Image (cartoon, rainbow, N blue to C red; front, top):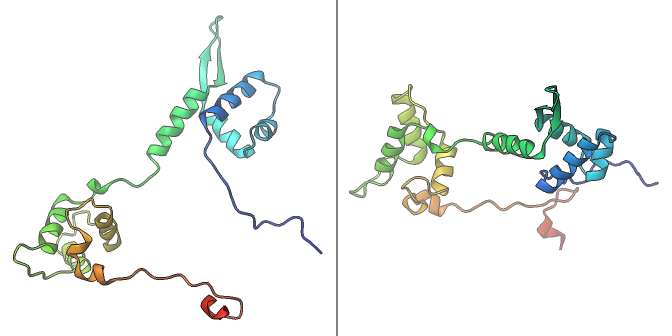
Length: 181
C-alpha cells in the first residue's frame, strides 16, 4: 500500500521577486480574488500572500479626501529589504576594539614567542575585563576565517594541523558506508 499523504518532501521556499509582487498588486487591486486564490495564481503559500499584503499596505488619499488602504508592491519591497538588512548578525564592530587589537598583538608576536592560543587568550581577557564585550572562541575563529582580523590561519600553528571532519553515512544496521562495498 502506498501512502499518498506523506510529509517528508523537501522544502523549496523562495523569496518573492519583483514580478511576483507586481502581479500580487494587480490581483489585490482587482478586489475579486481571495488570498488563497492569489496564492494559487502566484504559486506561493497563502501565508506568504498574507504577510506580503500586510507588509506592503499603505494609506492612500483619494480625490474626495477619503483615506483607504491599498497594497503597493514598491512599498512592500522596500519594507522587505529593510527587514532583511536588520535580520542578520552584525559585523565585528560590536565587539571590544581593545580586545581585537590585543588579540592581534598576542597571537602574532614580533619576537616569535607566543604565550596564548585563541581559546586561552579569549578566556584570560574575558576574566580580566568583565565589563567589555568579548566574542566567544568560535566567533573569533569565524572572524579569522572571514579575514576580518589581521591574523591569518597560517599564524595559528594548531589550526593548520587540523583537518576537517569527514561525514560518514551509516546504514540501518550500523555499518559504515565504506564497508558496504
